[in-house]
Length: 435
Image (cartoon, rainbow, N blue to C red; front, top):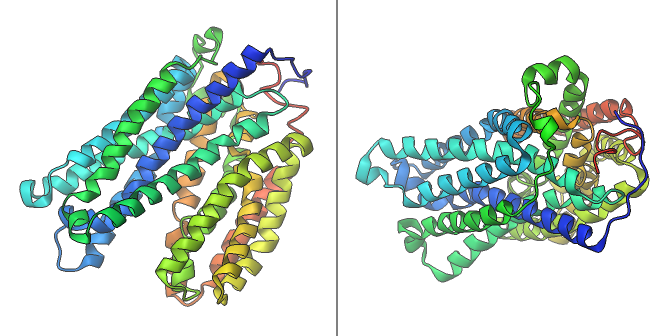
């Protein structure tokens, strides 16, 4: 890794260009996550159209299985788009990624139902979700790499944090669109045709994001793109194996606790705490809104105290506080108390998520960065983040839900141990000499 370099003085025009690049990259990230999550939020309305059954639970399980299949495509997407970004450029990879998400959403919006084309309907739905899974798997690594490279030095934590601002924003926007449709359309209209509207919205906004990304400047240098070993697994595992497994180690704990206190938490409030669905949804919507706003604050904090220090606090607090917070939520009766506990947990998670893409980018050289960041994240995310809900519900069904608290705490402990071995990335970073 390179030695520390002095903070460059940016002209007003250079600052404006870089900030617009952050906006362009993060807008596509928002669209990607909106398109990916709108499937989960509308599944209750379209499940019958693709999986005929007298049992609504069976229909939802089938749609959930298709959702999970898209999740498991992320490592392949991380490898494929990481290679493209390191070989052809970050801009090219990000444009292809958002176009693929557009195509997947449009395909679902226009897809014939089981009643019209039979078993081909669920097969096409699965194909569209696999396509989207590839796209979102590649989006993280390429956008994290690009935003880290274009961020203003000395403020990288602040600017790179907008990756998670838009990731969370995409989820919130998906919820908002569905809520608006619920107010405008009857339940029957939503089941008949209204469920298609969010996918049309997603496809249309993806086209806008494509044109925004089309105007971005490339950050990858020609000499790195032209190197034979750029974006190859051989280069990654021959020379950067330690960095890969280090990132995998703290991503495992980070992804697990992120999904525990975001996507799974609503179910936990309903199934374990006994809260009604509407109240739990309200608590989580406002909690995610606050969580989104926390990202720039914690990103800026990392610019002051260092990425390693932020990660150490994340690992330590995640290990020590997960059990007490989940135990308190289990018996909570007030939605306000639940909201406060969840915000406490999400503040801890923000120590990781605000700098997640940046700290990974700092650990790989330019010619292998997008692949290293994307693949290590996608593997850890798919295995530990993607399985969080299934592990939690499985242990609950066995009557040992507390074991899940231990599992999350232990994985945060693993992240802590891994981060103890990190160098001070303010002093030693592959990004230092690339301005």
